[in-house]
Image (cartoon, rainbow, N blue to C red; front, top):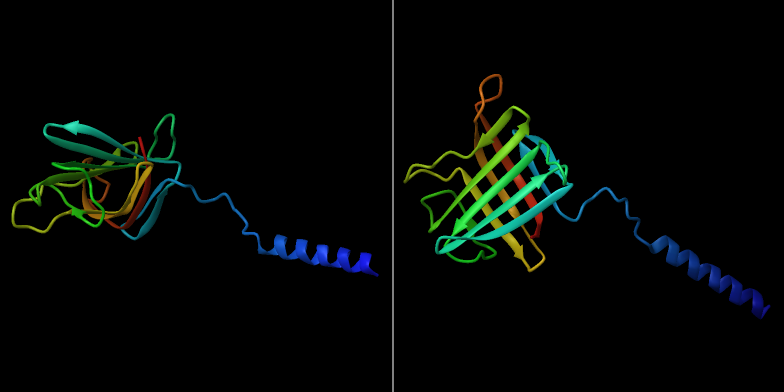
Length: 172
């Protein structure tokens, strides 16, 4: 009888352990860039990286998202921030003329369909906003939004509204 109770307790324990384990679907990536392009969801989930380099007396940061790591193919997103000091979480970075930093965003939707942020005239609202929520030695994360203008000819739309952008990028 004692033997059967031990077996039953072991089976109950194993059942509880197996049922409480979280299934890993494998569909989500650790590093990614996601955003809405004129309302359509775009996910770039194969590679998202951030590179840092010296830039005059400050720094240049580039966040790149692309779907094929060895041979990047569209869609591809690139955000560049030139800043006098290192990045800080909670600060919103915009394009040239705001708070001592300059930022740009480029997006290649397809082989012949490219977009980028325009230069913002002083006194107008920024076309690009990037906010870092977490900065570590291994990765950066945050959110972004912007208005991008076509760099190619018709039939592409003149501009894209990029909203609800999020990223987690590996630091290189």
